[in-house]
Length: 272
Image (cartoon, rainbow, N blue to C red; front, side):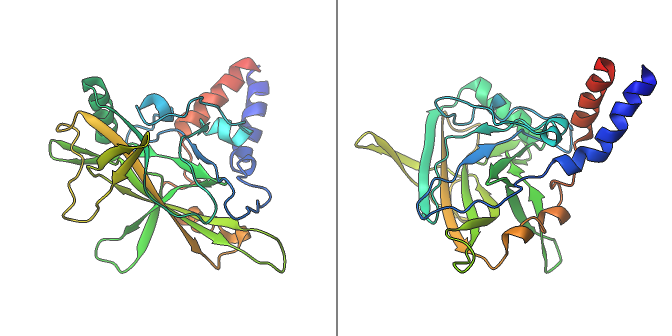
């Protein structure tokens, strides 16, 4: 039985990355077409223990659906689900409200624990994982990480990232195909206290970023609002090259969560 189990394990180890092929063929979007944003597991290099995205009290869609998973996603422990974020091709948005909810003591503790353990939020658009750009200290260069932090801890204070700027890059070539292809997906997270009002049954918010803007201290507020911006920009990057930066990034698709993989392989071993 052991020999047969090893026979199952070894091919799987070789195929972990080869089965994780995010987007085998390009998708062309028409102007104004819906671009779905999905959510993935929460991850931490510190703990190596992934959690479902909706373990935290983020804004939820009316019905949560799970995407079909391939072998590579299963081995990596991916848990891909839909989200309430609305994005349309080449339509910019500013300070759009996702939801507003009461911030209970239990919710506050959940967010604080995840921030303390340095958990990252992982989103997906057109099979591209969200990336966050950082400037290297003392160097004139930037680097990327996969996902973005749930929040920031400074001393005994916890600041939640409750606003994001979604930067999407597209490429088009009318001579070869019709429509627009997504070739970049970057996130800029912010912690802020938005001014929210209701007009004609719709929540509207005013978002202010920058050094003078008030940040969202989890210990101070009893209500929580999530908002986002969407900004589209043309790029010369071709669809076939859109993963080049991800292969070099910290915490990118090339970084394997061995805890999830070994757990899956052990299950396969004992079932064989």
